[in-house]
Amino acid sequence: MGTGVTATGVVGTGVVGTGTLARSRGFTLVEILVVVVIMGIVISLAVLSVGVTGRDAQLDEESRRIEGLVGMLHERALLEGRDFGLRIEPTGYGFVAYQAARDRWMPMDQEREFRHRELAKGLSFQLQLDAQTVVLKAPDKNLSSNAAPGPQVAIAASGEGTPFRLTLQRDATKAQASVIGDALGKVSRESSDHVAKRT
Image (cartoon, rainbow, N blue to C red):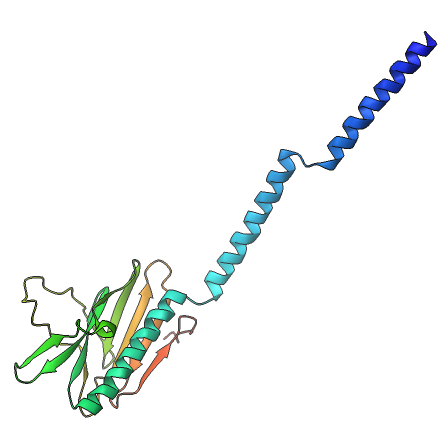
């Protein structure tokens, strides 16, 4: 009897010891889930803090593109002695060239960099001319495809231009980036992390 008890005790101890050893080497499903939840919370807080204090890359990229294209057209207007313009819609924009022989503005869609562009979903424009907000309208689809409506922003052959402030806005967050042009053709930009003065 003594030997049987001892054998059972030894065998039992061996089995229990092995089970305890195996259990201490791994993680339970609950432990893994807790770690995943904590990591998710930390990542979401990091993303939110960047969104609140950081820049809107999409707004900055589009405003940088518009600034560059308007600047290029100012130089081109001086070199070629032609008038150009920027036509702005609520969610898109395009460039036009004035053809004196036909007495009309023509879209520049044949030139890839000056083609008509639509803004990404959730973005929109606000335009100010002489500190007055302009109501932007979508183009009339019934117009002839050859002619284009006149531009709101003119770029004259003399190098002068219409003073303007074009603001791109993300509708969901109200983040903004602006392109500003003066009467002498100087174009500048305010990025989305610029803090606007409140009045």
